[in-house]
Image (cartoon, rainbow, N blue to C red; front, side, top):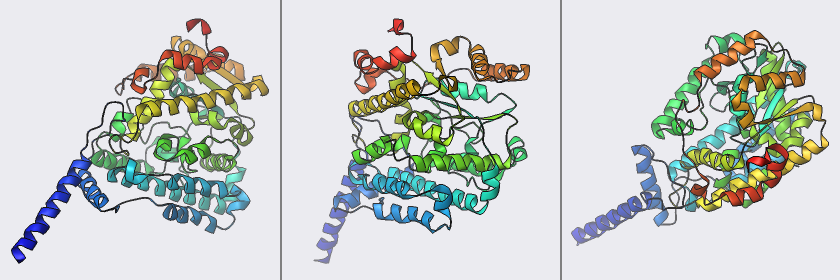
Length: 460
C-alpha cells in the first residue's frame, strides 16, 4: 500500500514539474514581444514559479503594500517636506505602479526578481539622497545651477549624439552614469578628481553590478547598447534621477492603464522636478563647471512646463527627426529592456506599437503648445537630418544662438569624439514600423503637426 502511495506522489510531483517546465518554456508567438533568455539558475526559478502557479500560489511577487510601506520611509526623514515639498504624489506613483502589476499573467519569476530589485533600489536611492540634502541643505542650496543647456524632444532623435558633443566643451559638465544611478548611492556626491582619475569607489561598484546583471541576464546591457549604450563612466541622461521618482519611462507597459494615466499627467510632477533640481545641486556642490551644465532627457518633453519651473533660466534644445524612424527605433530600444520581464505572449506588439506612438503624440502636442507660448530666445530646434550633415557646425550655430564661447579646444574635442564614436560602434538593433504593425500612413496622419512644425514637410 505504501508503495502505491509513494508511486502516486512521485507521479503527481513529476507531472507538476513537467507542467511547470512546459509553462516556463513556452515560445513567443508571432506578433508578441520576444522574451530574452536568462541564466540556468533563473530558468530553474521560473520553472518553480510555474509549479506554484498551478496551485494558485506565487513563489515570488511584488505587492502594493510592500512597496508603499517601503516608499513611506521617506516621510520619516525630518525636514523632508520643508525642502522637497509634499511626498504624496511620489507615494501615489509607487502605489499605482505596484498595484497595476499583473505579475501572475504577465511576468516571469526572473522578471519579477529583476523588477523588484530595481524598484526597491530606486526607493532606497531616493531616501539616501534626501537624507543627505536635508542634512547638508545649506551647502546644497548655495550651489546654484545657472543656465544649463537641457536637451529634450522625442526619443531617438539624435539627442545622445548632441549630448556627447556638447559635453566636449571643457567649461561644461554633464553627469556620468555612476554619479546619478541607483546602482551606487549618489550621496555624498563625488569629487572631480575621483571622476577624472576613476578612483571613486562607485565606479567599481557599478561595474560589478553591470557584470552581475550580465551574468544572470546574459547580454542585458549588450543588447540595449546597440541602441543606447550604458556604462558606469559614460554620460547618462537624468532620466536615471527621475526614475527615483517612479517616472518609470522604460517600464510603463508592465503596469496598467491607471499607471499610464498617472505617468502621462503633467500636473502631478512638481515633486519630481524639485527632486531633480536638488539632486543636481547636490552634485554641483561637490564641483561645478566653469560655465554650465549640459543635461539631456527625452522624457522632459512630457513634462516641459515642470522642467522650466525647476530651471527657469535653462537654455532649451529640442531635437527632431522623421517619425517613420523615431517610432520604431524607440519601440525597439524599450523592447530590449522589456523582454527580460514579460512571460512569452504577454505583450501584443501591435498594442505596444500604438502605445509608443500615442505617448509620442502627447509629447508633440506639449512641445508645440509650449513653444507657441515661450520666449523664442530661450529655445533652439534641431533637425536630425541637418545635424548629421555637419554636427560641429550645428553645435556652433547653437552656441552662437545662446551667446556662448566656441573655442578651438571645444571643436577639437568634438572632432575626436566623432572619430572615435562612429554610428553602430556597439552594434545595431534592426527595426521597422512593420514590427509593430504600423505603417507610414498611420504615422504621417498622427504626426502631421510634428512634421509641419519641426521638419521639412517636403520630405514626406
